[in-house]
Figure 1 (cartoon, one colour):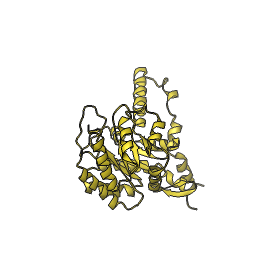
Figure 2: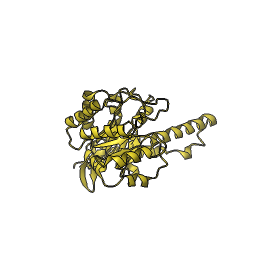
Figure 3: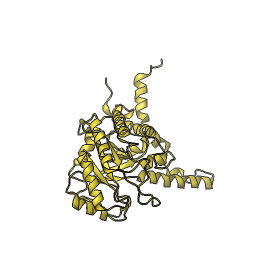
Figure 4: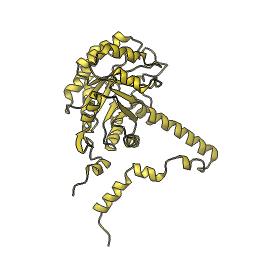
Length: 317
């Protein structure tokens, strides 16, 4: 008897598809539907297989493979110090652990058009639903670093052609390429942001991500008023977190990315637990505050292994 799709997903057999309303729907198709939805959608950050599974269990319909979070979890800076193959190893585990689409933060595409189009092909093989590329120079600098003002941007035509190369060489028509516009981050104004967004949409981008590090939503408001709904707009409200979600709906935003909050939560929890154990030289004050080992086993899908062992290992006399 064939294993169920749910059971297959538990050990990586359902990278490309997942069940939606009882039907198998490609992860790429799910992501494209989210981007084109007429209601506001949400994607939550994860940085490894375990956090990705937790995000899906929570109920999120999509996962953000955060470059900041993945690099930080590897102990390196968000400056392309982790190679694209190392990042791919991480997102492969994330894809195997989940049945919802993953949008990978692909930085600048890890080079020119040739690097970017190869990246797309390798990600498709691993069941990743889409990439988000930013129009900065390789190696990239994190957009929220206050010590790096006026970050240099890529040539508009060069980046637009990079987007086109990714779209031309993807094999799944529903694989998504989101073009991230860094004009506001780099200190440029609305006109530059619009010029870049139009160029990338014309090149075939499935959506544009408009990034801002202001503490209010004014950059996003100005862009949306002038954009004319040419393509879906994605935002990352890490800095303007006090803005209500209803404001995003009223502006006509397609998708909100909660971009790094599981990583930051983990940092706070690990710092507190390590400090408590170090100071107490005991576990007595932490055991009831942390996940049980049984819960870790559950998240690892130990139940699937036990069922498989019963089916595939010979029975002793």
